[in-house]
Length: 257
Image (tube, rainbow, N blue to C red):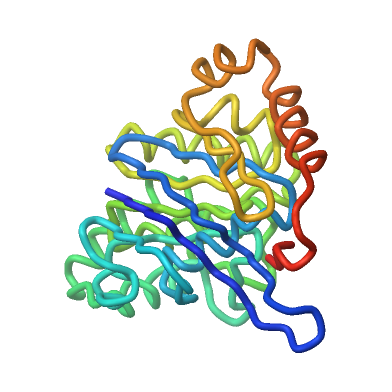
């Protein structure tokens, strides 16, 4: 469903030379699976997800989403994905219904199919009581529901969540994680980026620990525990990063995003 091979992204800087945001990332994710990218802020997670979403072009390497190349077939890729992040904007002057409808139309859904799809989503996410609420008057929880609904209104096979719980209170974050788990049960291929250990442990079927644009370890939680002789994911995480930092990296290879 998602195949990433040798993905590299670097930026030129006249003063300090080349800065590497991604350094040879390789992984794959399957339908009905939550694949976690776990790393500190600045690890390169967002850069990888922007490439998968066709917002950025890689410097080297390849990425395919549901069989489509992100560089050669970007329009096809965009039809395959739904994207949500903590920074996903909600339009203040549009109601919940208008917002989801707008994105459905952008994806080219026929009117009758779109209406049927929206009725189902608004019922499933218990959004009927906020149909006519303007974005400017929505609570954080309302905004989160609308963001998910508009990301999946076209029923994409692949969903990308980029630090989606950042800034949410514990109840809203818990509800979002519950919905991600439901989407997995529906057979979606999900990429879930986070720096929160508890989220990764609870939700992800496979994990890649990312630091400075590199994958330091990859596998199921149980595989990581066995490989590193440690049950606590946070301890595994800090051990890997400490070893990497002690080994030293050239200054020009520090990541940007």
